[in-house]
Image (cartoon, each protein chain N blue to C red):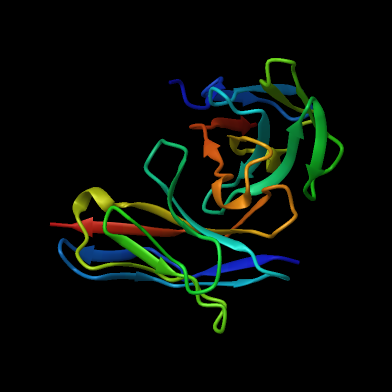
Length: 113
Length: 116
């Protein structure tokens, strides 16, 4: 079945450091890929998405590129802020599955001053 | 424009009881999906409702059931509660018929269920 594997957290960074959160997936066909963010006490918010190979999703300084050859969708940001502290989830939707999302286990990011 | 709203925010039940959680989708959306998020885990898909029918279901027992009303709002019912049902229950809404690239799911803040 479909699955998403994320690097385990927590990830602790100083403000302005570079961020990479690894995500790889297993799915048949050509899934769409997503990063969602969950701030404390809140639901999930879509951060960015990519729907086909080599697409780059970007939002709020975050980027991720859909790499079909390595089945990866790593999340990156050049300079993190304290306000980026949250849990980040990588997810996929397989074509034809009526938008059922399959999530990774999440990676907690803690940014300190 | 109201987003996805869920009620109640928190709920405490005991083993064996039954619970009903409620969700109102984002304005203009007609599809509701429910997810269970255990502590420290990613959300797991329970089921999805469209046109008042269950369209797709994840690997959850029949104790988990749902309903969608003509106004597109939805309920999640869980019978014979177990300790393992303690989790954050998330509702997500979307619009059927959108091409996948635009079919983004919007999540509510969730209902935290504690089973004692």
